[in-house]
Amino acid sequence: MRIDILCKPESGRRCERTLENVREALNQVGIEAEVHLYRDRRKMIDNRVYVSPALMIDDSVRVSGRVPEIPEILGLLAERPRYRKRIQEVA
Image (cartoon, rainbow, N blue to C red; front, top):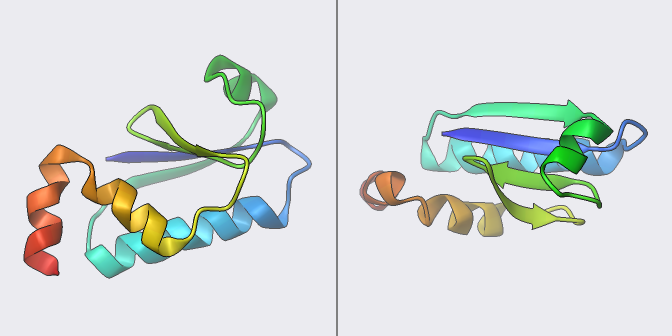
């Protein structure tokens, strides 16, 4: 699983909080994933994201313009078909 967080270069605390929430959600469920934080306007435009922070899971924009909370991230992770069974086993 690949999780990307897209931010503007001048964005600060909101991007860091998003990264912290994603890591905490992954730790709670026990899923290993590649987590990348990008502070690049070009990457945002290429993905048609115009407000930051944006959370992408497997190249699909799931949240944009706000910091997602941990329960919301857990719900987004549970939607991924191949991880659904693993999350049910952990829970």
